[in-house]
Image (cartoon, rainbow, N blue to C red; front, side, top):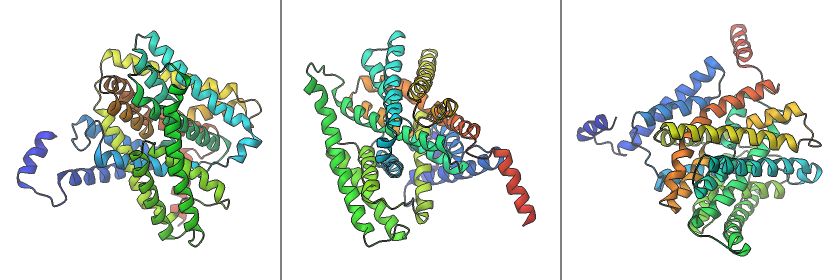
Length: 417
């Protein structure tokens, strides 16, 4: 692909640049693939997006350099921030007061995942700092993949809602800990204050930026309708500004957006959803995010030792999340069977995990590539396979129609029409 593009670039001079043409064609192909895959197989569109990105990455697509930086990094952060703001806006904190077992489920599955992945990788002779970083990354769920699967399958029910909440909370923990730990991988803190200080800085900066975002949007909603197209523009531009500010002052941009969504939910009690006017723009942004993740992750080098470590990480992560959710399930309002499907729905890894890996790579030049060599193949595998597992779990939980049933109903409806 690089040779073809080099020959083309000698006589074609696009006004917007060759990368713009490449990405435009790639996104068009991803959109078509996602649509066709969902129509004929019932799988969510995100699987099609990821497959196209994977094939492009394996073919040597040069439009996404690793480690991410500049515009590519900002667009990924913005896409994740938009998803996490929406995810945070679904969570009412008073719910945890009435059902504290949900919070316990979240803490238990996250802690078990981090510890189990760490000790399994150490048993496999992975360096301690590398195993620690991978354990923290493994904590994070993927609200982006889960929300797209829910949208494509039109799922609704306790399993869907519980999986969305637990994925969002585990992401909150991972973003905080990784952002705090990334810059201190080479230092050994001997005091409690020295260990907690980076966490407090990340949380403090992210909280301030998130609070400013929530207050700004709350002020806008005093005189603007939540369904207005202009409100959508205000929302996205303020999230973009918050993303840039949080990253600049030492916080976490996605974490600030998540906190902003949580705070806005408490300040603006009236129910409101992601505006329909933003649908096409949000879809394009999330599609770009999934394709970018798979393109970058597909460039990782595979060898027998890496395959074994990736398999161990993925399997340990799945078992740990299932055990954690099941152990704290009594009194949480769901059955044992529903808790199992919740854990299955939390299996994807995608853009958030890639951002966490990027933080380690940019902060630790020696350890970062070692973390990425294991994490990137795991992300690629679980972005595709995880979306399929989530779809199957939602179907098995009875919270969405089966793919073939939906296709038959649509076909019969078209025939009657």
